[in-house]
Image (tube, rainbow, N blue to C red):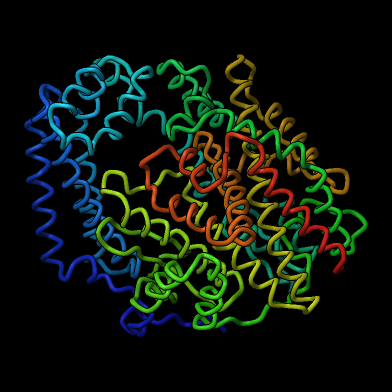
Length: 598
């Protein structure tokens, strides 16, 4: 019988987040919106004179910092209210209002960055010497000026900006085709009852213990992508062409260089990941061999990759128990860190349980000047406990950066966004493993750990290699067709999964369903972030206090330095292969233990 979800009003207050820590009332929120509009108008008056004097430059930067800090807080308040119950029409309207205000602010202040870019850095240096208050904004000014070599005249910048909406067409049409227009076949479930496949239920169906169900789902699902393969290849070709257009327009040597430079990440970080993972494919092949042995099959197929290797050893983990376990697991990070996580648990930073209208999934979000907030849909499983540790990692990263940095440098870059969250997960895994001797339970935990490596390092590296090669093909004028894409993807799949995996012909069309291929070299950051986190957690467990101090400096860095430099402070150099290699060495040790248990 389906579980009836409580209404929002029926959820115990202690399991809901306390949004009054942001605003005591809706009236206070509306007052900030009035101030945002006033500040925006003051900035707007400065068009044409942003960099005409030290005084004017300081005024604009100060007003923007004030406006954007208020904008961030007001936006977060509306979004958290909306996400706790998306059926609430008042909160729906508040969310829509904030998107409109954000768009209005962006368009009315769009002149600021081009005017700072147009100024000579020697002139800006003189301004900083003339007015000491500008020293605070030096890094912000330097980051704007860093892209000067890839900037255009004001007229051409306007023209390029006008292409933005048009350039979204491949991604938008892909989304409509994959999520709205594609109708997937019906198959029979474990009980012989028919149900229709969807993008949402495909992977859960592939986790089924019934192999016939997995095979039917796999073949039926990919038949739709094969049917639309030519159209989807055309859309992906359009995505590659727009990436090439922007790279050339901005005088980058390649689409890859253009993409990673947005986060100030060297190209060699990307190449290191691909090269190091390729040198460690033997470990992935061992994983496949172990999976084949655990499942007891003569042939391992791609529809066998999601189902658990170990028969369910799961037990219910209530939220109160999950919290205590997470606190114990994070003990290596020191008393101060654990005390702050406990504060989050006790002071309603977290919205815990599902209710009618609540947004699905989990996230950490927040604004400068207030503690972070965490949304969960906790369901008393092992995965949910890992999610709690993960999201509190994000929250603590935000907390330390907000406490240590001024607003303008408080937000960390996407390149390091998954490091703190995954580091917490690794510490939780090591804690659980060090506190169980039960063979089945250990194997179940190791299966969880191995699947994390498989999904986050190897699979994302394979995606990253596919992106790199398809971009190179397009840059060299090769035709991008469903045949060329499917051939390349099938070859990569065989290379990554190795001889013990039957790379079924349908898997050649997997490229056609991955939305991340429209995100412009995004996925590699999952793999680098996971690798860095494993390296950091290993260092913290082995070295103790000195590693913890370095790690906290990283957490406190916000965007005050480039993400690669911040990771170096923590003791991880992503410009060298070592971090990825160290993480894959851990993967190898987990494989060793798994082999002894099965």
